[in-house]
Image (cartoon, rainbow, N blue to C red):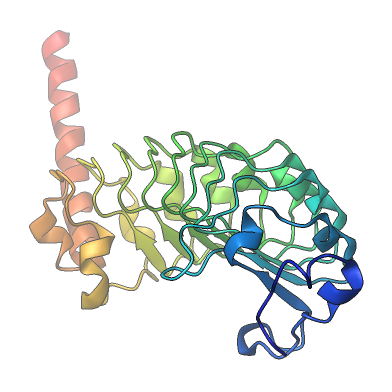
Length: 275
């Protein structure tokens, strides 16, 4: 069905329903509506009367319509309780309407390329969320409620202002992809080493000087050469040095285990001197 949306067709709910797609190859069979261009600046309220919607995309085209962006998400978003996918990337959002937390059927939420510094209270209600995209925002503190999203499998928080990760991050036991490049992380909690499902972990371009002592337990991390620059590069690493990290997880584990013994010896020696 045509993807051309005009103010006339958006003037009433009946006309808007005629623009719903069900043949998008990415979301085949799901009822999808995409709004772009000038209509993002003045989003019609009639959108939120289509309660059967399963996929809603409110994003400008990357090239042709970047002059038209969504300034805020209306509170009426909470009415669309059947949404499984909500795409809001590349807009001007500084806050996220708290009614988003009512969308308990959501499985994928895309919020990249906005101006968000936090997420609304109650975000932990999105128990079915599997994929969350938050890259290129202004988040300084890791939202603790994310740790309660036990079904989350994919989390992208690259290009933010994160300084640390919570110990409770290990509660996300199904997470297989965690992207944290281009932040301000100075250390990683050792609890992250218990996340056995992790396949992809990007920590490049941070402020890390050392890796957690049990980092070598992350045996399933994909150390493919294509991802090396995203894994750990451009960190001031000392333990292990980046030259060791480039050799892969076995080299990292050997280094950390060997140095673990040396640190204990030094600690005992210092204790003996104090006595």
